[in-house]
Image 1 (cartoon, rainbow, N blue to C red):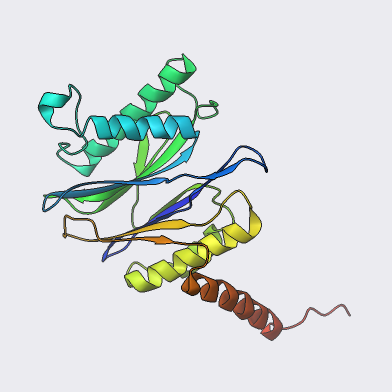
Image 2: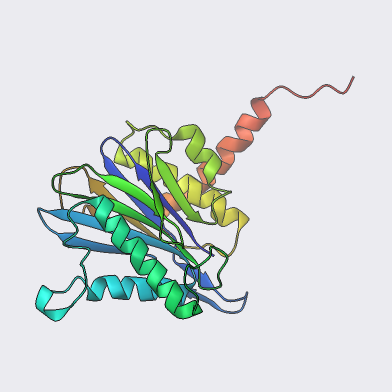
Length: 246
């Protein structure tokens, strides 16, 4: 299983992903699910993946191969797409291509064993920071004021805190804290999602990668947030009025 989140803030974009991949309780591995491409001063693009590992690795490999100089490839490049919308189309087409090849069926369905779902985030000079959710069929939707964040993978446990506490004006520091709480709730409820976590903070109009960090298993801040949130919930519960049975 997987858990990845992309937030769109007024300040920029915040992305976090776990790294656990499992094929049963006795076959657990760590694989990166966050990938970045950059032309400094012109664009920064982040992709997060959930679903069949072979499918997502093939998609990332194709995108990276096609990001090479023009004389070394014969396909459109994510580093040459004129906008984030066109980059999302390219990624969606690549995902659909890979699933069709692996399944041997044109027009892949979402319940295919080779299925994958992606979050694409970034900014291309001339446009604003944008955030997309890309489906296995290759189509996609874009984040908006009404839907300012996307989740993929094991989404249900970490969503309530995002819905309640998200604020477009929040700082990067508060956004990271919010995502840590969302991931902590997911980790507590589902053992198939696990640390370390990968983090990328993109500052709007910087056109270069921002803070890139891996949050390891023994990260002291994450441990403090996890234990502090647990105690805060208990205290909030105790302060609520008791139900009357009479």
